[in-house]
Image (cartoon, rainbow, N blue to C red; front, side):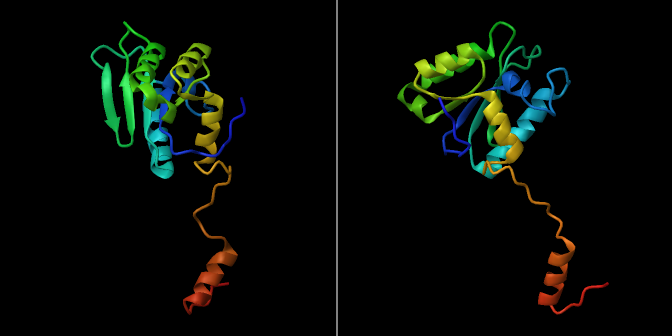
Length: 164
């Protein structure tokens, strides 16, 4: 199945630890890996105007449950369960609306349960690419600082002469 880098308006269900394993700058052995992913997803959601639910298993004692972080809902699964099973239950619970969601995981079992529930599937590698390139999928990022020529043009427009 081919995937487009074009972003649809569909919300995402994300296998968090699976996605972390595909990112070059967040690693599973970091103490704050989940928080760093949540921050990255929140920035993505604000720009792309998306809704994300990200699932993490092996929650620390007393930390299991749902926590909202702006546009991101983080779901921490206790040691008694798995993120994979929680994602499958969520897709099944969506019923017919599951077709409006995209499950992000490279885990074959997670992908199979998502497809069985009629949700769309995106491999974590592809979603990691979206996070790196931004929601337009263009891969281009703009440096917020103007170049010398741009600065000179702005100064001329506002009646100032640039310093040489």
